[in-house]
Length: 146
Image (cartoon, rainbow, N blue to C red; front, side, top):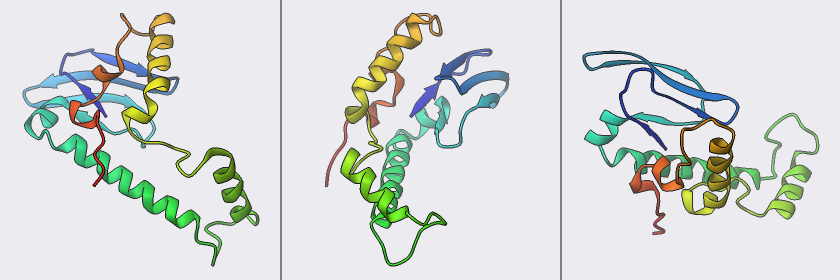
């Protein structure tokens, strides 16, 4: 979960294909220039500060959707798409990468995120090396299993 403050011209670049810039602020209206894939959730800081539960609820919703998708991949009664070898591809992926091949959560991605942030700074894309915990809402740093 990415949380931005409200400073005009503040921007952050994530990878090669995501740039978020605060273009204009007028009263309580903020205009963002966001060039990002749709799967990256962004919460405005004032919304997050007023509703601290929102980051964790959004994260849990994504996890629930992922679980349904993973479960659907194992259903073999009918193909999920037009690929004739879809079921074979699913089995090969599971054999190679395990049951959770797109892991969610900071804990399971800490090493990858840390490497990304180090490269981001080394390549001059950020003014300093950010720590992983700085990039996410504190509520999402730990996962709770019920």
